[in-house]
Every structure is written in C-alpha cells, then in structure tokens.
Length: 150
Image (cartoon, rainbow, N blue to C red; front, side, top):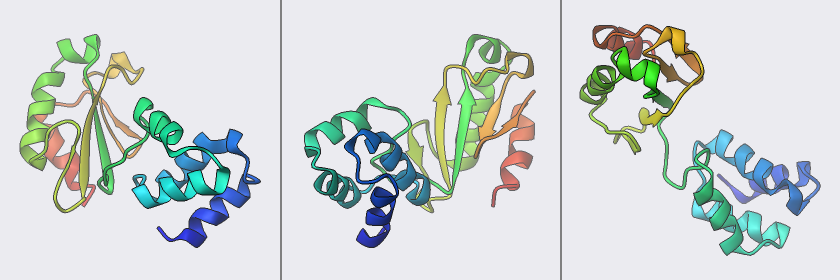
C-alpha cells in the first residue's frame, strides 16, 4: 500500500487521532493486513507514538500484522457448534487448506481462524467465509463450499 493511499485515508478522517482505529481498520480492509510501513505512516501523520498503535493492533483481534489470505475462514467452536461437530469440521478444513488456525496458506488464498461463537447456534456447526455464513456444515460439505472460493 503506497503512502499516498494511506494519506488519503487519514485525510478522510481529518487527520484526527481519535479516528485511529477507524483509519487502521480502513487500511486493513483495503490491504487485508497492516504492514509495518503503514502503521508507521499513520503514527507519523497523526502524531501518535508507534508504541501506542502497536498496543492497539495487538490488543484487538480484528487487526493482523501478518498478510491474510484473500478468503478468511472462521470456524465457530462455541458450545453448540462443538457438540454438533465443529472439531471434525475444523479438522476437515485444516486438511483441505493445509493450514491451522491463525495461519495463512503460502498462496495467500486462505486464512483460518476459530471463533468462540458467531451467534447462530441453531445452524451449528457454522463456517463463515468472507462474511458469508455456511450452517449445518458437515466435514464432507466443506470441500464443496471451499471450492466456491477459488
């Protein structure tokens, strides 16, 4: 991500340090992660110490300091999903993608995360890909669903 694009995002928020989280979220939304150069530029332009920004981006799970895949897979591991087979679903997705929770594949195609609950317990187990919910997932169904995200 180039400096001009980062500067435009900052200017959109009137270079206001109180908009720091929104600025970081917008940069990440466009880039899929927060490169060190972007974080440094934001700190420089807003007059916010890098240590403070580092604290924020490591505290909130929404931020990533590592490249993310084009498609983000979230497997719900909450109680309802767990008892309905989430561990088997997770095993299947790990086998199909070759990655574990918290990882991104080498092609930057998929990132995999587990989440405590996605709020649709009646549909468990649930897999969310790029914000699209897939309920009542069986391990055998996961390959067909993932194929749609080539």
